[in-house]
Length: 113
Length: 113
Image 1: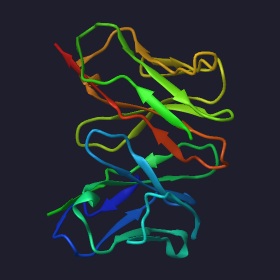
Image 2: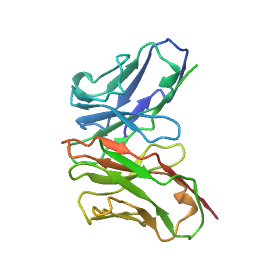
Image 3: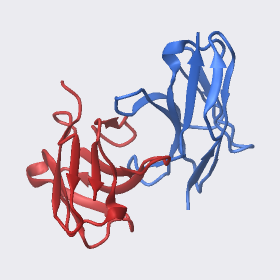
């Protein structure tokens, strides 16, 4: 068990470009969460998967954001036409079931220039 | 909606001093309450939790008691160490059937020798 893994750790992109992040949860964890953390703030919930089904999306997740979890394993978060306001740390977490601890990855820091 | 308010930092203490970080919450129903810690360069880690009123969570010398009457979950430690320097986040999970966390803004703790 190597924990929740996120790739890349850092991403610098130009405004208007598309970016994709990957999250590999702890094996056999069926629940996967994405959060966004801006400087000086706590993480904010973006979306939640149970297995391959995306069960909830926050209003923070605009139409430019899309998340997938094919086959209920790894997940990707794509941001299209990035804006400077998208600059943040994107965190992934996973858990094995309702009421169980959510383990976080180290995050992907996105900088849009 | 659900929300968490915690004291602003940084909190600066000398080693072996007593620590209190205040956290209050607003929530419907019966939330679970958490403290997460983020050490420099690392991901969020669960420090302790409490799932019902009057429960006390404890770990690594840290304690917090779920006070429903004051809607509070203050973090305390009797004697801090330099290694406790980190950012501490108070969080809650509403009774939604899955562990979607609502975080406070975080409090940075700096402990000097």
